[in-house]
Amino acid sequence: MTSNDTTATTTLDETQEPAVLFRETAEGKRLRRRVILTAIFLLTATALALGGVIAYGIHARVEAAAKLQWTTAQATIPIVSVISPTSTPPDEEIALPGNTQAFIDAPIYARTSGYLQHWYFDIGAHVQQGQMLAEIETPEIDQQLRQARADLQAAQVNLDLAQTTATRLQLLVKEAAVSKQETDQAVSTFNAQKATVEARAAEVHRLEKMQGFQKIYAPFAGVITARNTDIGALIDAGATTPSKELFHLASIDKLRVYVAVPEIYMRAAQPGATASLTLDEFPGQVFLGTLTRTANAIDPTSHTLRVEVDIDNPSGQLLPGAYVFVHLKLPQASRSVAVPANTLLFRSEGLRVAVVRDGRAELVPVTIGRDYGSTVEVVSGLRLDDVVIINPADSLISGTPVRVNERQAVATAQ
Image (cartoon, rainbow, N blue to C red; front, side, top):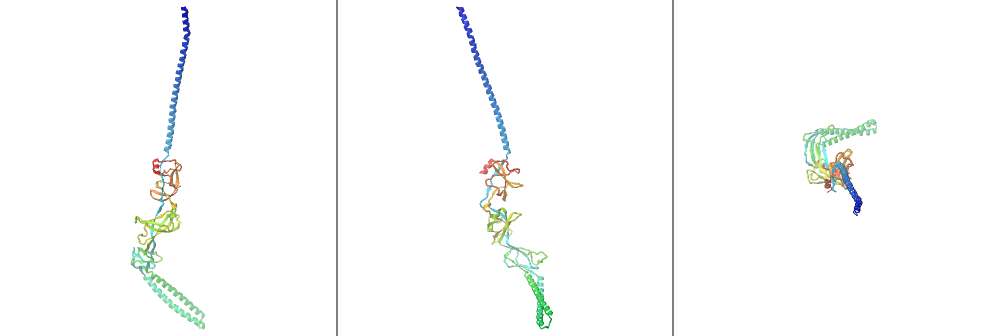
């Protein structure tokens, strides 16, 4: 029984050992599978991490390259400073230079030759029309007049004799006492003597007029502005030599001012318009005048319109030849804008101003009015809402991308 038991035990143990081995082998497989899965997971995680690092690095490099390219492109776009045009005031006016002139201005010459015997007025003297300014001694004219009168008297005597002879012969020819030929000759002699008397009388009349020019009178009321002769001076009024001006007379109760108005402002030059005059020697004082007439023609050389402004000067405060500024009011249609002078571009095709539109520079043609020095007036080509570039580069062309200085743009907007 013991043998059987032993045999049974041995048999039982032998039958149990493969099961134990089998269980150990399954656990090993599961362990190996777990290890393999863990290794695969770790390898996959490592690969993913490495791929992420690589992808991040590539993305960072691409982004850095793109940013560098954008920065480089932005760096090539010039940064410009801008300004907005300023509007002109509603009561805008133009100030044009001019010189005052006497309303009547005339040089006084001698009409007869001789020596100046006396002068009665010097420079600055106010004279009335008809007052004698000077007197000339004319001995030659006096002698010629005496001779002409004697010739006239002799011609008159001959005329009387010829008339008597012709009358007698006309009576005798009726009685056939004289021939018809003698009578006709006597009548012809009478007519010739009559013409001679008329010629002698005309000569006497001419010399009397010349003698009347011995006294020089003022042709109008005014002021003596120049005296170019003195007592004893030789006065030559001959036609072969240029005459010398004795006096210069100017009427200053009313003055004229001739002004050249630019063509673009010709609408401000309307006859009857009021013009104000200012002078440096009278600071703060304004003299009012009237635009009386224009030339009605544009000068093709200067493209200006010549106008005349008359101003009353009863007190004589204004003097002829003074430098004045004539202020003319501009009509509403002539309003303009002003920009700094450093915004202008002088090109071969004409004057240009650079403006910013849609992030690009555009060169627009402009027409300049008045030049104030630091600023200029633009009468056409710009609007108040334009953004004008200050100090544009000479190489700037239309269509060039530009960036506006942000800080300066904010200040401009304000």
